[in-house]
Length: 111
Image 1 (cartoon, one colour):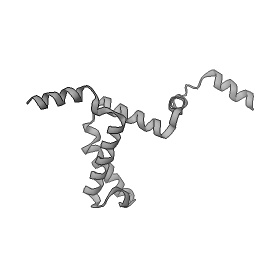
Image 2 (cartoon, helix red, strand yellow; image 1 turned 135 degrees about the vertical axis):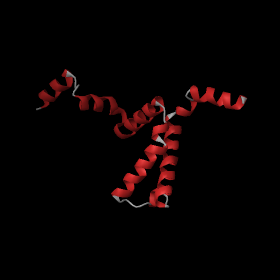
Image 3 (cartoon, rainbow, N blue to C red; image 1 turned 30 degrees about the vertical axis):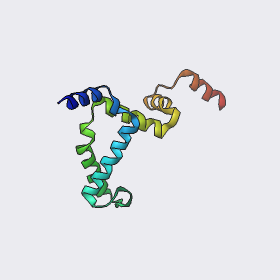
Image 4 (cartoon, helix red, strand yellow; image 1 turned 180 degrees about the vertical axis):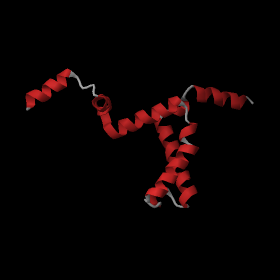
């Protein structure tokens, strides 16, 4: 009983919510979903759209819905960092239309 209580305390502290651990858990869950649906490993599974949709639906059901809001936020931020590098905040501002006046002026002077 003491071990279960200690594990709850550690989980509550966010020790298991590091980006690397979450990405590893996501990769393992994706592999499990792919094996469950196709019987093949993720790297050799078919690329058919219908199969991919079934795999992603299974992944969402078995993994994503069980994540806490904090864990989901960490995963989203980590993927933004991977995709956009150090330009994550700049990309988000651009997407939401919040480009600063300085950058607008700089773009005008270049043309």
